[in-house]
Picture 1 (cartoon, rainbow, N blue to C red):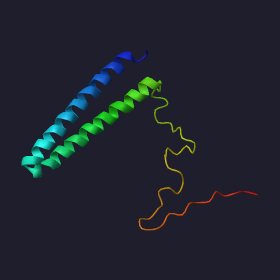
Picture 2: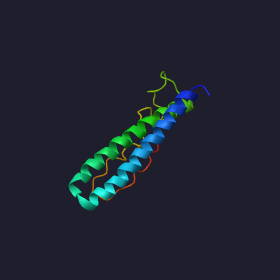
Picture 3: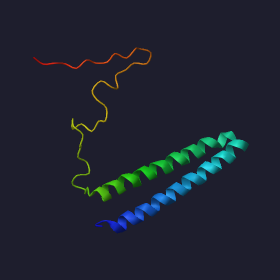
Picture 4: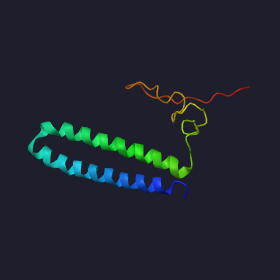
Length: 107
C-alpha cells in the first residue's frame, strides 16, 4: 500500500481517540451522579475528541482512496457546489406544511 505507514499511524491514533472518548463517557456518568455542574466540561471534552476522530477519519479516507493534495478540495457532487441537499430542501419553515415541489417539464 502506497500510504501504509501513514494509514497505520492514523489508525492507532483513531483507536486512542476512541479510548479517550470512552473514558470521558464513563467519567461523565460518574460526575453527573455527584456534580451536574461539571457535566458541561465533560461534554466539551467529548466534542473535542469527536472532532479529532472526524479529522483522522477524513485523512484516512483520503489516503486509502488514493486522493492526493491536488484533488483534496475538488467537489465531486453532480451540481459541483459541494452540497448534499437538493435545491429547496433547506427552505422549510417550522410550522408550515411541506409541499412537494413538482418537477418542471420543458416543452
